[in-house]
Image 1 (cartoon, one colour):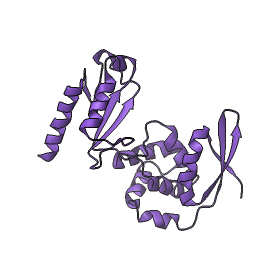
Image 2 (cartoon, one colour):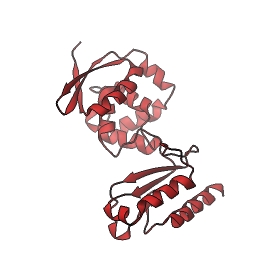
Image 3 (cartoon, one colour):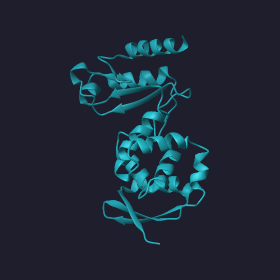
Image 4 (tube, helix red, strand yellow):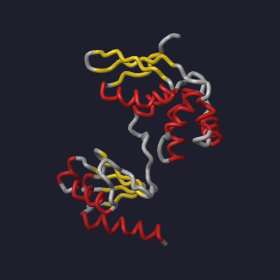
Length: 213
């Protein structure tokens, strides 16, 4: 069976790929080049993948998204965007399904695109997506204390960026384009300027109160 070139990846991505694709019987053969890993795949996808994943995700919903976007591999980014809008992240099983459903694609290719673009997330997002700017202006004016206050107030464990109840997710971004309002937070698209630790706690408490009715 011929090999298919799927991506040029830095070596620190290789372990992640091995972990991910081991569950769908794809053998990864890694050839290192001076500054990056040249990753090739020999695919051995089992016949039962489509049936197995149909029990884990809403395939009818995915079929609708694929069809609405034209159902062609050239529209992969648009399809992934719609899937992320629906689930608030890209479930692994959805990536596998898309890769086996659309002619000319493979799970490896879909995963490569999903991990290449920063707009996509493989981790579940909360109902309220909090973005804390840590660009130069925001950092100098105290974005880290704000970030730490959010983590403490939401009781986020080390390494976890989404609350167990799925209500809040937290991430840092390099710039939000509002340096004159630093430090800045954005929650579901709404900009909160000149944040402090106390101010951000008040914002979170307001959102929590709304959720509890």
